[in-house]
Image (tube, rainbow, N blue to C red; front, side, top):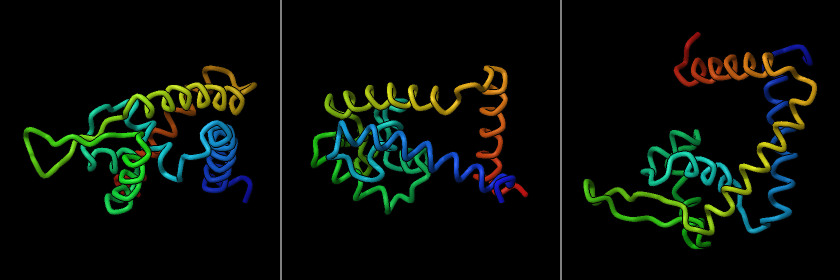
Length: 143
């Protein structure tokens, strides 16, 4: 089992998330599950529609809606009506959300450095390319 791709992907993800979230939640204990992923997405994709956030975060839109509601209530995001489509809101981080997002980026860098300690840069780049391919293959359902 320890030599299988599925086990190693799952184990690496789980251990990385535990380390990252433990540090993040020590500083921001008010964050709820799903919120860090949305903050991270909005840091790279400011002013996004809910559908874009759901797709980018790999979350079902119905699951995302209550997450966004709690984030708006907590002052992490704001929703503004789109001029193009009044039914859809554009979601953006507030100053509070951006502050947390910047700190998250620092914590991600630290967690990545710790996780990749001893891995040569060339191997890191190869791993990243392989993971991107696996992600795309998994998303499109390639066999």
